[in-house]
Length: 393
Ligand SMILES: Cc1cc2nc3c(=O)[nH]c(=O)nc-3n(C[C@H](O)[C@H](O)[C@H](O)COP(=O)(O)OP(=O)(O)OC[C@H]3O[C@@H](n4cnc5c(N)ncnc54)[C@H](O)[C@@H]3O)c2cc1C
Image (tube, rainbow, N blue to C red; front, top):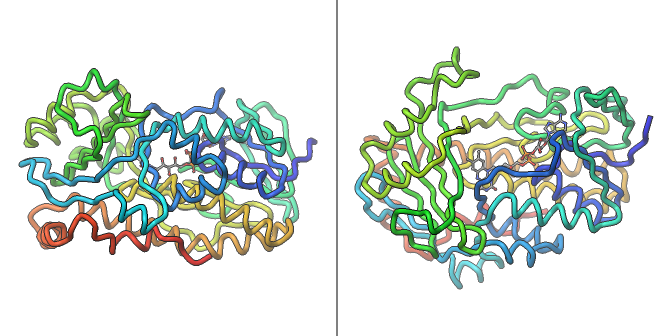
């Protein structure tokens, strides 16, 4: 059986960032990915200063900046009336406060940057077409078995295998949780966008049980959109079918929205939808020499745009703890989860609540949200500090 010192399951943003961070800290790392290629879906991703700081420390910020867009503002508008609700200014005061801008980019471009850095690093090796079907905890080692019958033995296993993580099954019997929301997303060439857009801003249109996010990506060549709504047809019995959240529901959800939103929603490719899930925070991520990272550890709703940002923070923390503990895996894993669980649990919880605030209608939450939004100035970052400022390590 092949012996691997450090094995990462999953070549997504979390796994790739972790491979790079561990290698730069001096550890040989092997990444296995079930897909035939390392790819991401054709949609955008937002990276906040907390993630950009890590990417800078990993030496990839310039490459990310080359393909990203730095929006001037994040503007919240009402989806029905078009009324301005609030603006977050990402300009000089934001940069000064957090040491980094806010960036939006194509997911594939981000993964390509991380993949290229991993491929260039002599301490990272990568394998595709390697689906892990079984994981055994041997206390001071772990054994993974692949779909083709092959097995690897490793001193340390990092489960960066996403929302439906196989590694997590060793730690918890919990299941992904849905609030019956569904997303449609995708990016179109800017030339095909049939609504007037503000190319330097990110726009979020808020309405009852729905929202639409829009921003330019890939140096402004593409326009990314994410439409999210609560399915009226969802029931637990049909959860794992396609009988809820279909394109007819998408159109109905945005039917009362203003013309610009309705036109934007018509532009979506309707062939794929993403039911949205999070999970309750776990009190423990580690069993023997197996630990979790990214969505496998802390899947969250996307309302704070932090799932990948937190996975990138995980990567930095795990590599730093491995270095600080001179490669003592037990101590490093313990320190890693002690640092990361409280922070990611808070982000998971706030993300869920923030979704309720976004989608509120006709209740006290909506009234308070609108009043708060109205009263704050564009350069009031008080409510962002907990997330974007460097946190205690
Ligand atoms: C609509 C939407 C919008 C979002 N927007 C943002 C945003 O703007 N900013 C942000 O920070 N986050 C955002 N997120 C969250 C973000 O996409 C995720 O948190 C992030 O991609 C998680 O990365 P990961 O590497 O942990 O997991 P994944 O991206 O799920 O990667 C897991 C990898 O493991 C592989 N894998 C799984 N099982 C196995 C196995 N058994 N064997 C081998 N390989 C396996 C998979 O193929 C996959 O490549 C958004 C999410 C959604 C749904």
